[in-house]
Length: 152
Image (cartoon, rainbow, N blue to C red; front, top):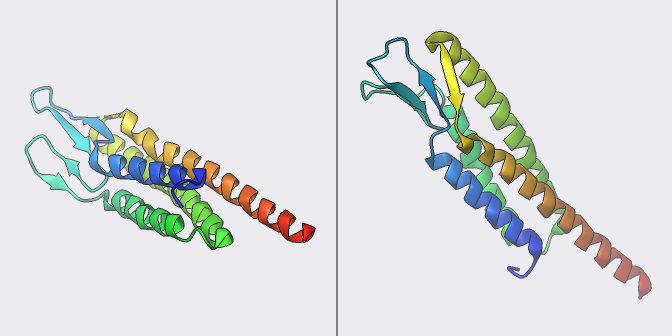
């Protein structure tokens, strides 16, 4: 199970998603120069006064769903087609995360005046690429098994 390269890709995708869950995604420029900056995480926006705005919880929910699906894909190594479908579903969820992220950032940018993106917001794209690479390796394994069945 662990010796397969797609398992390593899926494990790295889980690590990237968990890192993105924990780190800040960007900062909002507030109107006052003395107040500081509001920081956007996946679950909340931390305001300079110490309060939290939970209006971006959907980002957290989407990434939280991708982690167990990746783990299920890792442990369903005997069913390669289901594993491939799990990878494709996670790719679609990551695309959905970026759509929700763009909507949330644009809505908050209109309210606050500016938004600077952190490098952490690229981690779902890294996860998406890793899921794509895992899916490609899974399908290659399936093709190899099917060709071996034809030889018998």
